[in-house]
Image (cartoon, rainbow, N blue to C red; front, side):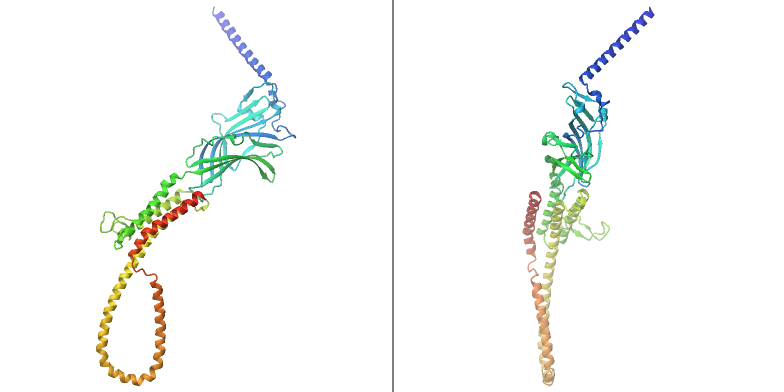
Length: 462
């Protein structure tokens, strides 16, 4: 009984295996019938020879999908993108009967002829292979081959950063044949600009894709003229971040420096905020302590200059410095630093003119008192010496007359020169130093507004 059961089990297993192989061979037979030319891949098909050899060139229709742009580097002047490259061409050697298409295993691409397309200006690239090679090979009955691959590449992009961060960068992705010249191979966008997908929905951190367009060109080399496809895309930088991060703080520091124009000239610590306080920090100087009434409060002056210097130094370490471009943001920070430093110099000039005017008044008052005393002494001694001097003058008058005339001429000459110098410097003398602050309250904001209008008009619209 046990032997009968074992025989039945063996018969069932044999019969099931027989049916399985029969079905498999039937499927293979159907595939062979449906694809009569498929065996040419391993027999008469030569993958080392292009289709239409010694005849018309092979036309490669290309479509492109931009999956993502991971990064755009201003320092290295390149961008990293992941793309799906799809190429279609017709190979008469792969024509088979029927109207269906067949998708092959990606490893079979090694048995087919494929175009030697490469990415121009690529610094480094790789094909994705997780979990298998990201390739697609599909054959159509009319001999059309669809070959799609997924590539991540870092491509060079020459950038002009003179208008950073209000710049627009035009980058390009170029596809070219490595060995086949224009006589052997022709590239074409399958649907023109519609051959590129993914640009409209692309999300970037600092940029917005303003526009993109395609072009069919050729690349000239000493070995020949090669077909080339080019995708141009214009990237516009988003300026909102830079306005909040740099432009507004630097502008507010400039406005803060104007507060010193409304502070009394006698309040030196309040306007300069830079006093001798070696007991707090090492060194002869330190910033004012806002809580100390004797040292003044933390108002604009050197503080704003130091703050602008901090922003300038931070910008040099944060923003790109490729090829030592003088960028638009550097120009604006330089303008703001000049206005802040000019506000500090304005007080220095005002304070100097005030002190000079006060010293001049004291000097005039002192000279007036001394002249009155000298005149009184001269009047007293004049009568006593008049008689004795009169006799001596009569005797020596004839001898010294010539010498005195010559001496008087020299004195008059130097007095005239001194008078002209005083007149020249008087033109630069401010009679009322308080008016400097008065005019500065209007001139500084007005000039800053005009400079801003010129700056933004030039970098945004020119």
